[in-house]
Image (tube, rainbow over all chains, first blue to last red; front, top):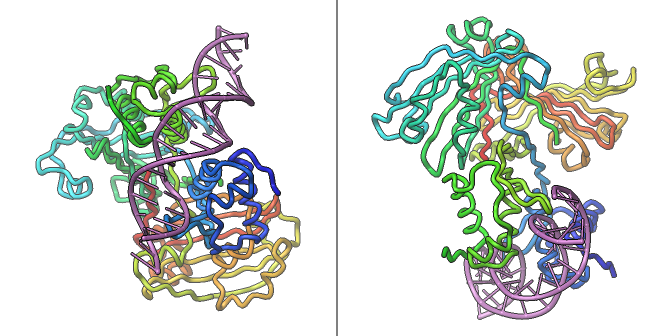
Length: 231
Length: 231
DNA sequence: CAGTGGTCTAGACCACACA
DNA sequence: GTGTGGTCTAGACCACTGC
């Protein structure tokens, strides 16, 4: 009999059995009580082990149906939110920020649709550049809801970088990020020093604070940019 | 006093206090026993709530030192490894796979450099297309090391999809993925039905099995593709 | 060395999903 | 209905680490 004790031991043992094909993909595992008895520990311990394995995508758990080994062990990639300055300085380059434009407007229709805003919502619209060693690194097209973040109206954006200001000022509860490849238009090309039509790696980030839209940022990266993740 | 019960309630309440600046960044929070007493629940419940908040990067916990609100809430994005067929079928579209070319070659120089291969390493090179409802969805440029995966030589690649075959056949220990925007060349344009020079969202995935290189895949996505992650 | 979080236990009740 | 996982509790001991 395997005398296991910690939930880590239980996790490891379950993983071993899956890897050794003792519990092949798709198989229904024994219930928590049974495993607890076999391993000589409390059900809560087995529960924690299996809960974490489920979070990691190794197994699939459903009430009444039981626990199964996932057929496609969907491994997860994790990476941190890009903070421009940190990314740039990590490469040893010098970071520079510049504000290109600033205006207060009613939310345009496409933005209202994207954020589910009421008609006439006032927005702060900023366009900024982030440079690495003087080379264009990222163009930031930033929209901030003045309804949710009224204090944004009083900030000197020629000095403050909206990316960092929002992070340090305002927590957020939900966020979504979309990556895509887009073609540079005339204006974007001028900022990033690429020709019109050139492929641009684009991230569109939206954040909410308790259901209220906070900001939408479209980040356009300079030529040659790659986003890397290991797992 | 707040009579809370579930660990979700406790999490929410803690988050609320952080958001409302009752517990500002950097502040030392009360201990688990104290919070448990105040919220009217067991310490284990508070523990679970705080453990999850720590995992999510909201707070920082250390034995003896106590729990503090994180100054720089480094939130992490998680997303799953794309499995083409699953992605396509999830949208309700019909998936189709086609092999475009297959050859066995010595690893070219750029590939040897990328994977740290010995000179003269034999590679299997496949080019495949993945379609969604008949529309080009992804072009896959796949290189498999026959030194690490000799059995790949005997597979009928006109039927088997390398993406799924590798996942189900071979576990991997390390992987790296790089996202970028590239311009389609003539050939890629023909496969994806876009004009040469069009922006293409590109993922380059490399995997190793215990230090030995397994495969490198360059995945080129069709027009309009977006990779979405929530957190 | 003392205080905080980390974990285990045994028992209990609940919620959901399938028959 | 009935079985499985989901969660709570009260109490206990342990492990790390800052003082």
